[in-house]
Picture 1 (cartoon, helix red, strand yellow):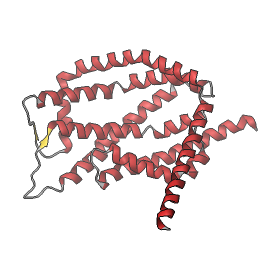
Picture 2 (tube, rainbow, N blue to C red):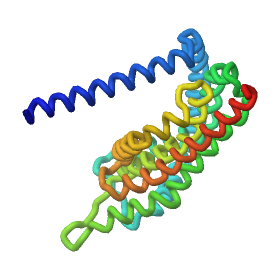
Picture 3 (cartoon, rainbow, N blue to C red):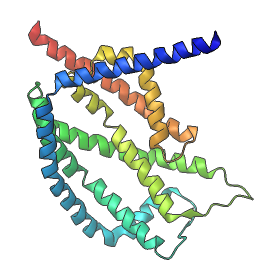
Picture 4 (cartoon, helix red, strand yellow):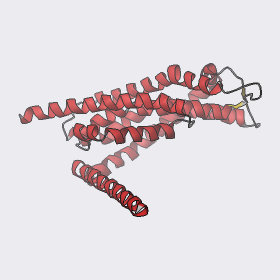
Length: 268
């Protein structure tokens, strides 16, 4: 009986998951036509050359300042960094330059993303062509700077608190750069959540009722995302990302409700 019950529960959960996926796919298909999506992807492919050029150009400009960038990134750490190989110092500065050029190329990246996909939203009532990319850039940088000045120092100090007389840290410069950059970019991207939910509402992929009804599943997904996006799997750093992510989700739900109310006004 127990084995049968477990099978029934598993099958029921799987059936529910498949049904939800089918409904979501149907909603996307109804909201966006395949031809429109391929046209947007084709436009984005053309913009990819401009994005690559901007990243390379900024990389050439920023590389002479890579040591200064590393000094600023090192401000949250009280320990010296070490290189475990002859080329590690050079390759680490090269990696930091690449991430810095990507960071400062965000306006160009978001501009071409919006240029490619904006026709999908203009046909569905979103008239502004400047507000969305500008908001996306501001949200990304706000999340990145929030991480750099608030979350990252707390996370580093918490993890460094585990050293003792028998545990002395020797932190690789390459791993430290990856740790910090991963945190900063992850926070920049998750701060886009309210805007993403608002845009999905415009193309009728999500609605406020769906989001509020499935809030518990959203919290579960946020916990999984926090575990995946944070460079370390400890609960403290997951909470540092999960907390703001939940607040951003609620802000997104509020924006979706506002959009639905504005959409209902002409119909009334």
